[in-house]
Image (cartoon, rainbow, N blue to C red):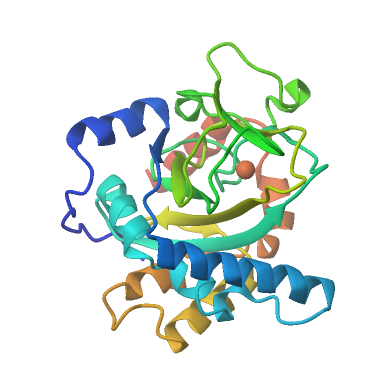
Length: 275
Ligand SMILES: [Fe+2]
């Protein structure tokens, strides 16, 4: 899928767009209305029950979580960052309670191998009951998306503070944080959670114009979204276009053979054979 320029929605100011490009994230505090928030929590609660009972666990099929992938409150702001068409990559959801373990520093930019940041991928971290310093804090390392590195480059630091890192532990219900997917982030485990549950959803979007790695299951889910009408009468059909994905498993053997030595040598050989 080649990227198509789209008209921005102007929900984001140029200062916010610049801030995102420099820092790698933007916080939207309390942006979901109460009804949407309530319906999403009901879906997450049902999902957790279903997981425990081996019931329906396909998020795309659920009445609030499915259409969340095209929720205008989110995707219209993502569009202001992309300025081109883009495709939904995944949705995950759960609540986290007392004793939840942490997640070490990492980033989630899908690229094999990690070589450049020419096209934008974002993750949207949604906190239905906000963050209050219990169970888990979100840590981000501003500007880290600007340097190309392996996803686990900082893993040894677990969820310790890093020089310049920011701890996000105070958000209103219905908040979301849009992060550049290459931004290093972590979840620091915290005590608490006896009564408070940390409702967490993450969705992700990939800019059109290149091929992104994704499993074939995603292709089925995006088709399901179209079948269920989550494209909102076609307005957001571009979100479920699978033509910007490839399954990396199809290419790993060939990749491992090709991904050795000097790219320059290969480029020179190509130039020689064509000149
Ligand atoms: Fe992550």
